[in-house]
Length: 444
DNA sequence: TCTGGGGTCCTAGGACCC
DNA sequence: TCTGGGGTCCTAGGACCC
Image (cartoon, rainbow, N blue to C red; front, top):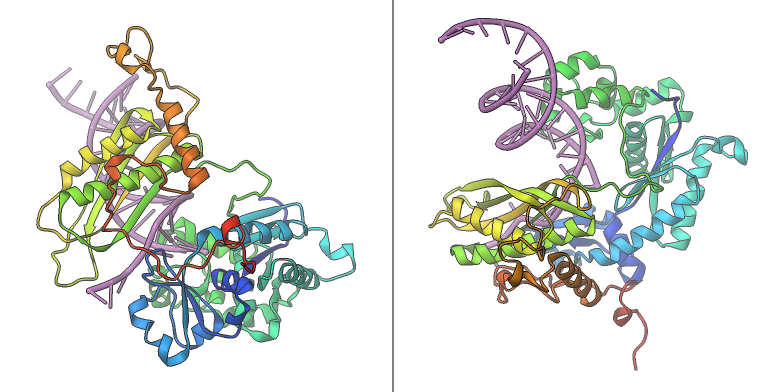
């Protein structure tokens, strides 16, 4: 592998909640949660909300009483705002080093080689400078974890967040081995990056209960008994770099390999017609994202299912795949394919709770598309009828209108106009930073 | 007709992440 | 009444080929 380099993980504390607080300072110090798309469950909580016992992903109906009982504030997720705040935060962090990898909306890795000698400051001191500038310029509080691998940086970040005494920055690279072991012994194995809810109990069964236990485990045994991915985590914990997170801030955006659009419904759907409409909408959104990254899809899968949470409903889940020949980025073709696919798996008498459309086998739109009878070419059987119907131009117009006037301005009739199945957020804050009409200014 | 080893491609499903 | 919406990587097994 390459030579070891210290790397920091910088992430926003309760990121979505912190974004809301920037524009509503009255929320500081109050328990606050941000709810998922459907106002279904909590996807971000402030420290005050955590102190009330609210869990990540906890359903809203279970915690709603805390509004009255504890002054909990709940807001609908405003992803437009969070994406813009994220861009600002990442830009500020990017000023601190040339090699930044943006890992998620609120996290980025930053390589710190050469920093220690630069101003006589320690890596931890440098981390404090990053925190201070992000807080001052963007208004978002952060924590910083520093290690010799991504997994160590994640671990350090976890510790920095959990324990007050680190003041928001934990640097494992400066720690004597004994102290490092003590620290890792106190981190539960389930809190290690790469260990999920499936593997954690199985690891404990074989006596691996802490991050230290996992670091001392035999990677060969782990690869055999668990997975090669987890074996990499073991080596990363020991300081050997062996994973790659991508997200190089300087690189071209890497196109997705699959695109999934799915939603749960506000009420169970029983009719095939409603499901058809919902799937058309998902297909349309997926197709739009497909075009945005300049790809065509060679295959598509749909799934429909009942709620796994409602014991009284008959459990049902079905999926079906179909090829798109030739590969396409045309919304209409994709919608037609989902509807054919639905006819293949729809079963009456089921209370459908969720459905989705996945596009895969994605390929660049500008290569290898030699259709036998291109639209409008002489020789195409329907050549005469296809004049003025260039699908690429039509799709471009569709995307441009929706980008200019907001998602859903123009859509195909197949997606339905009623959309009684759609959840509507009820607690949405304004898009303060990205919409002129919603700027936070006093109005006459 | 039978035989074998080795390769590729595809798909489904499991595990993880935020 | 009420439980997110995205993604990635890896593996195993089957089909098919030489």
